Length: 126
Image 1 (cartoon, rainbow, N blue to C red):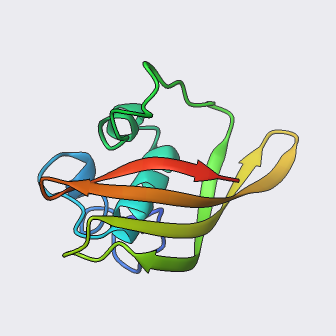
Image 2 (image 1 turned 120 degrees about the vertical axis):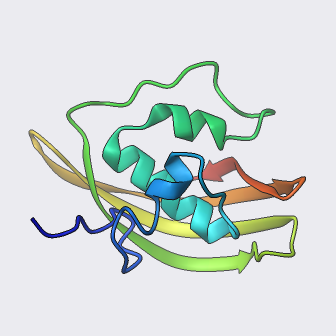
């Protein structure tokens, strides 16, 4: 059986790319890396990771993922700041999904904050 490609389409296997972040072995070094890992969390159905990487000021109390929505592609359209030595960043993306009745996409401009060396998703505008 061949290794599973990472859902974020970053070019590595899931075990090499987003799984270490999801399991807590590693942390995102950039806002874009966090964005990619959050997309992968949607794709693999990991709401705990999504909540853990959501900034406390905007994080919902709970998060339920739609089991019928299958996320399959992420396109990073633009990134502003969000590097390993910065404290904020913006990532514009389009994420594609399939539902039993068809397919669609979500376009968002997401803001990220880095506190005490850890990146968090703050909010996004569709």
